[in-house]
Each structure stands twice: as C-alpha cells, then as structure tokens.
Image 1 (cartoon, rainbow over the protein chains, first blue to last red):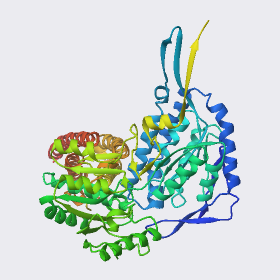
Image 2 (tube, rainbow over the protein chains, first blue to last red):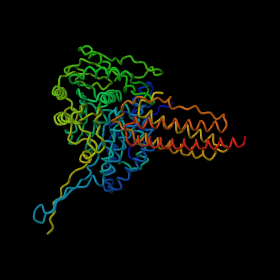
Image 3 (cartoon, rainbow over the protein chains, first blue to last red):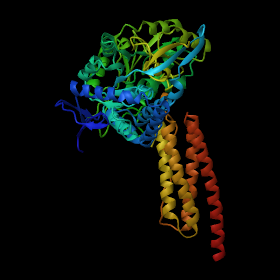
Image 4 (cartoon, rainbow over the protein chains, first blue to last red):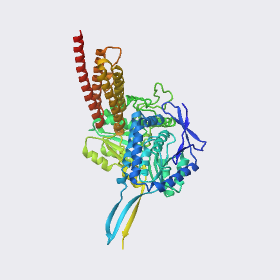
Length: 484
Length: 147
C-alpha cells in the first residue's frame, strides 16, 4: 500500500506542506503506517488565515438560505460516502465500525441542524423602547474561526463547530488531530465537492505550533477545542490573552451511580457501552461505578461477567465489540494506571492486560479491566485514564454517591441508574456535571443541544452544538433607531 | 456467527438480501423466471433499505451489547444444481429464515425506526414465502398432470 503524505486544504486547493517534519499515522489494530501527516509551518497558518479572511467578506453577504443549501449539499455527500468515512475512522482510531458509524451519523446531524440557520440566526426587536424609538438585535457573523480537534472523535468533533460557523457566515480553519487526521482529510474532500467558495473552509495539519500560530494571529476571532484539561486551560488563557473568544471542552471522570432499585440487566448493558465503548476513550465514558448499598455484590458480579464476554479485536470486524486503544503510548499509559491501582490497594477483579487478539500481534489491545475496592482518594478514581478501565466504589447511600461526584475536579457527565423519579430529580438538581444521565450510560447531547460541561471539564461560556454554537459564532449588534 | 452488535445484525440482514438477490437472479429460469426476477428486484431494493436503516438508525448513545442472536440460525445453504422443484424448496427455506431473522432483529434492536423496518421486512418475507408455497403447489400440480 502506498503511504501518502496528507496535504493541507487552503483556498479550495490541496497543497503540500513545506514542512519537512512528518508524523506517521498508524492503524492501532495492526501498527501499520497508513499515512504521514505534516507538521505545518507558521507561514502556512498565515496563508490559511489570509484565505479565510478574504473569503469572509463575500461569504458573510451570501444569504443564509444559500449558505444553508451548502449544508444540504454537504449532508447528501456525507450520506453517499457514509460507510467509507466510518471505515476511515476505524482505520485511524481503532474504534469498532458501529461506533464509527455512530460518529459519522452525529456529524451529519450537526450539519442538518446548522442547515436551519435561516431560522436560528434571526434576531429580535422591540418597538417604542422610548417615545418613537425602536430597538433591534441582529446576529452577525464575526470572521475567521478555527478548531483544534481531538483524536477520539476525529470526524465528529469538528462538526460540532464548523457547520454552525460557516452557516452563520464565518469562515473556518480546522486543525485535525495529528494522531487521527485521515477522516478530516476525507471530510474536506467532501467540502471540496460541495464546492464552497475558496477560503471558506480550510484545513491545516500540524501540532502545537499550528495552534499557537492560530491563537496569536490577529485575524482569528475565536477557537473551539476538545481535548485534555491541561491543554484546554492553556488554550483558554492564551485565547483570552490574545483577545479571542474560546470554548474548550476538556477532561472528564464520569461517575455512574447505581441504586439498589436499578433495573440491573439494562443498567449493566448500559455500563458496558459507557465504560468499554470506544475502548473507554470517550470524554463521556463512565469510568467509575458508584454502587449504592446492597446493589454492590450483584452488580459487581454482573459487570465482570458481561465485561469478560466483550469480544476485543479489529474494529472492522462486525462481531467485535471493542477495538484497540489509539496508540502504543496510550496503551503504556493505561497499563501504568492499572499498576497504580494495584499499588494503591484496589483489587483487580477483571484483568485485561496481555490480551492476545488472533491475527493482530502488533495491535494496541487491552481487554476490559475492572477494579473494585476503589476509594475516591485513589489515583485511578481521580485521573482520567482514557482507556477501558472501570473502577467500582462502594457507598452507603445516595448522598455519599453525590459527594463522590462533587469531590471530582471534573464535571463533564454523571449518570444515575434508578427506578425512583424522586432520586432522579434530586440527582439532576444537585450534581455538578454538565451532562446528566438518568438510566443512560453515554450522556451525549444530540446536535440541537449544547455539549455541556462544568468545572475542569469546560472552559468558556458557550458550548459546541445547537443554539450555543450559533451564539458563539455570531456577534450581537444592537441598533436603536429614531426617525425625525 | 454471534450477532452481538447493532452493526452485526444490520450487516447480516444486508448480506441475506444480497445473497437472496444473487440466488434469485441466477436461478431465474423456466417457469420460475418471472417470479424469481421479481423476487431478485425486491431483494435488491430491500438491501438498499437495510443499508439505509444501518446508516440512519445507528444511535451511539444506545450501542449496547445485544444477546441471543446467532447468524448460524438463519443461514440457508443454497445450490443451483437442482431442478425447479428444488429451487422452489430452497427459496421457501430462504424466505422462512429471512422472516425469522427480521422478526428476531425487530425484537432486539432498541431503535424504533429500525425495528419498524425489520418488522416490515419480516412481513414481506412472510408474504413472499406464502406466494412461493402457492407457486410450489401449482408446480406440483403441473408435474402430476404431466405424469
């Protein structure tokens, strides 16, 4: 197989980076190199921003209806190439094909919502705010925006932002994950086919240098980021220092609280997909089960029984239920956390280390792993492991469970499994997390809702997706009018 | 083959339809030509429907493990080296297996639109099976008359 060097896409042209620095993009199931991604230069960032700035002048004057039509076109192209896009994600990331299809579907849904821009972007007005004076608020596009995408949802995450930004009349630059850049490359082929005017959408491959250059560029208005908390904090501060708006969705440590009255069969199935789906590499992965009271013993046994049955392998095999983790480095880090859990006194009741997948001797595989006797002070209860490692904490009652969640520095998601409406209300009212699930393991807001987050899981005011995205990508201009 | 994921079930259904289309197209001969060509067209259309359902119905939030379905329970060995009666018998077995598959899939898949599609597919397979059985009966009558 020919290994190609990925290109940048600037002003509707595929351009080879001048950078001599290239990173290998590896298939996590096989360790084979599939492509090479360039670490683009600061000058190339400048070219992309220039193209986007020039394009903005014309694009913002394009009617919202016309901009919406580009979204319809893009949606159709994505539907046509759906299976191919999903397979590319499996190849670069390792997740199973079902999860990759789910990712592409969610991306398409964002394009569909953004196509509603003629309604979503409407302002508001009031007559007679004073004698003979009217006041109106109009939504205007703000200029050039960019996003820095993570490896775990390399295709979907840019679509939390790009469709809304562009539909609102802004122009855009995507910096894909350097670990998983191929799906964005394929997506930009579709943007090219949709025939957006030159400079409206641009792609610059690279690493931190590219991100810093974007944030330091005076013509970039704002940044959307999804990734780790340290990087998100850094980018948020840097964006503020450079006078830019930013939305940084970051790390997580999500608790799944199980009450004694939970419907156990369905709860266990839900926890399986939450903890081990995408090999635990979702920012919405449930990584701590908080078992309340008597449910502990039966729940623990059922979790081990179900997790042990999960078939691990190459994500392209439809019968496989969990793929590899994204890289050798990630695997080593996750194994380090397993060691740390043992050192700190947690009990390993399902050990996924050393799993062998027939025909894939070089894949970055680790099987579902479960610890019990976990306490909130332990490292594995506090850090985001980002792998298929589930810890079980035992607590006496609901209040203690809420306490465990609220002690965490993160506030991305939390779920409660119960048959009690009263407790469910209490949970969603009290818990400090942006995305709350009641009998749901993966609390993933759909496109018309914001992907929320609190505490160290989010830096900013407006989130990705839905109404928040429209607000983020527009300026509100107030006009007060009196006619003599 | 354990059908333990949404995609595994949907892809299995897609394979069944493609297998059925290929079988009917190749076996369309003699008195079976008209009905089998009709069935082959139907299977191609149903394959498209299954692909669409897999593409549009995937719901990431509830990609939970599915238990209790095995592809081997719905596999039918098909052979073209037989006479019309043999082909009809296989076609009936195929529609019977397809019917059972979609009925079971409709029960397991937690996405209403996809479950509805599977129920519709089951109804169609059942109808096709009935029509094939009627054809088989006529075919047997003709054979008896000839004798």
